[in-house]
Length: 185
Image 1 (tube, one colour):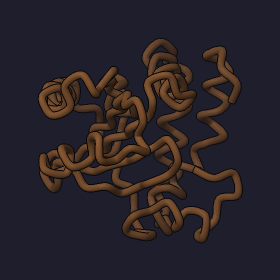
Image 2: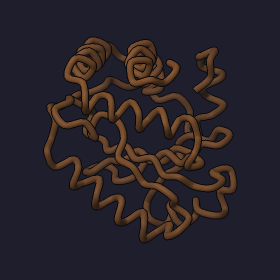
Image 3: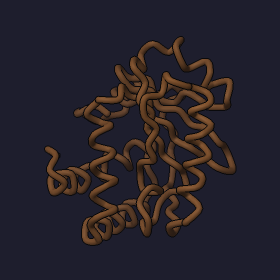
Image 4: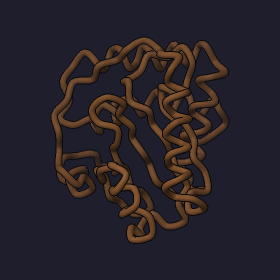
């Protein structure tokens, strides 16, 4: 998301515009890793060797962490900007394009029963490294997992102009945790 975070900059990237929302967190569900594995197998079937990595990211990938009950997945695609190379196949499987920005596409699938957020980046992209480092740090550090959980609970108490504003509000604590994981925040 842009450094100057505002409606105009955000709207330029959102395919369907801003969507006001409230965040609902639920306790960790031990079924989330299995839901990821089923989706990963589906994505391997859809994308084949176009997917260079498929990883479970986000709060549902961290045992014990409360989360929105949405499985977040990052897929390594050589060139996400070349939508013709993969997007029609994902759309045919029920994924809906939500975000279009250089080097990144975000899609939503599985509505309404088993929602999935799918992030497509080149496999070596800095955001892929950040997602994986953050996930791994939360898995390894009870203190950082607790800090992140408290931050999310506090922020979930209000309504947001769009889910991306909620995500942006978490950025300072994410950067703090990434610094402890050895990455620049």
